[in-house]
Amino acid sequence: MGTWVLTGNRIDTVGKVDFTNKLTIPPLATSTVDAQGRRVFDLTAQEGIHDFGSGRVSPAWGFNGSYLGPTLRAKAGEQVVVNVKNTLSQQTTVHWHGMHLPAVMDGGPHQQVAPGATWSPNWVIDQPASTLWYHPHLHGETAAHVYKGLAGMFILDDPAATSLALPQTYGVDDIPLIVQDKAFGDDGKLTERTPFLSGVGILGDEIAVNGTHSPYLDVTTRLVRLRILNGSNARVFNFGFSDDRPFNLIGTDGGLLEKPASMNRIQLASGERAEIVVAVTPGDKTVLRSYDPDQGTDFDALNGGADTFDVLELRAAATLAPAPDVPAALVPIDRLSPDDAKVTRKFSLSGHSINGKQMDMNRIDFAAQVDTTEIWEVFNNDGDPHSFHVHDVQFQVLTLNGAPPPAQLTGWKDTIFVPSDTYYRVIMRFTDYTDPDIPYMYHCHVLYHEDAGMMGQFAVVKPGQAPGRPPAHRAGTAHGGH
Image (tube, rainbow, N blue to C red):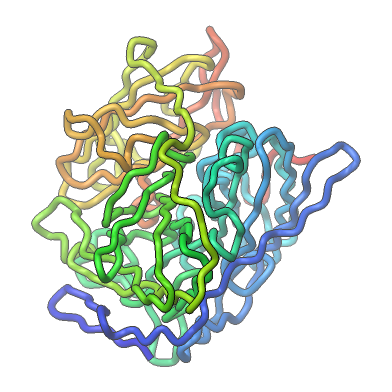
């Protein structure tokens, strides 16, 4: 059974995880096509008892099961319907993180689903192939709901991506990895442990991948694609392999890159995703590890910045199926031009506020005009690590601290890590959907910060239209449906 060592504020599990549990692969969600040609999924939020492995059996929440949820998969151009049934004893929401869709279908804090109710958002998939995810977004309760287990992947496909010679057989050479830090009590049950002096809330001292403790993955192909989601509440991971072997980064939050980038580390904050392809040799073993991340402060150890974890062991079979090399070119990315930006907005992250304001469900902070491009300048001017997530759009990073972005920030993004004294310029374009009264969110994706009020609201409006006011809110008033 894995153990952990705490020295001061440092956790180090390197060499102390025995990898005795076969990695669970979330099932692909079943779907039907209705009379209107829409692909229909069913998700049920429910309570259960989950066996993480290694003696860790705990009450937990999941979608269609005891912990996490199935992987939803749809193609560009499809209209999807997701029937979200809530069998919990309290209201929740389901937000489609990274998805471009109408605000009323977004699953933010205004689209609550009451106990016993079903919410049925529907929208057309109109964005590139990418690895997205879904999770609750209940104001003030997001951290607890995600930590208990309500989350899952949502994979989008398109012809440009499926035509590439990349590993793409789900569960065989294309593997989802939902990586989360967890704290367990002596009885093996999940605890919501917050370290002394932590500024980011829950930081677990053990790792679960797809809800599996001490996991191993049997690899049967020369190349394997790992779709990595940092599904933690707050922890930043700095992924690499124990032998420092290089890997190819092929995709980030919003889709594939223009070309693969060879590297041996990829740092992901809560909510960020990365698609990597790594090569193995017959009989090979290596460990996916999280090295201590760079959180940009002198107090990193207080917020997990000095921690190192063994995450997942890859075990290559004695004979491996061949695979072509990763293509030198992936997909073109239409670059947004700063010359086209009509507005530049500034966002200062400090404490539990953005621009000195905390979340107010009844206040829309600003309106963006449809079919316009904007530049957002995001700055962290306090000592805590923050992140920044924008609903509805995927954006592009223009500069990081005044310099061109590194390879992992050159594709489409919806979430960025913003350590102390870090300054981004990002560019985005608002298209298709307008609603003066139903807002989208922008917020810190450290879930404790989000729950504490580090969030704002914006509407997308037609030319000449002013932002309105969100409808009077009460539990269970999810808008939208069939």
